[in-house]
Image 1 (spheres, helix red, strand yellow):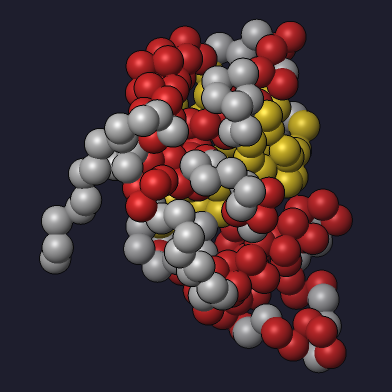
Image 2 (cartoon, rainbow, N blue to C red; image 1 turned 60 degrees about the horizontal axis):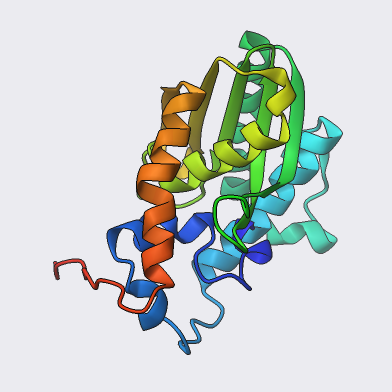
Length: 215
């Protein structure tokens, strides 16, 4: 889902953790056609259903199980329903504006850097950024992807002067719901001290290679 608007840029938010860990990975991955991956295609379908439900204030149970909808198994529907419930619980706790599939522009930090946020809630002085994950390996809310999305939304809504940002991973298949909180200034320091230098190095003349150790 998020990758569909980042694919023309080699180091979009969904790839930032890898780029920060190994700036040379951008060069190393050029020319490699990953091709369609079953897990990725499955995730995109579930994000589409999640988007439909959140925008229409519905749940997967409101849609038929035949025809085009037959692509979603019972487990798929329950997973998406869990994320919908999670978002609703957050809205109950933090009443405000619900944003679904929001494009963010981070080109002020690095040319070409854009992304698309799954879900966000603007609630007074609090910004909540939610990333729906449909893998089975737990993902930390400390991910660079969430931080980058938050930075893009902070810029887009700068006139609201947020006091805190809550980054949330909603990962139903792993029964994993992680949360982290930041002051906006903390995210800006992270961007200038870690994200931007890593991107500059990745697209510079001699990026470092730091491959992960073999298991």
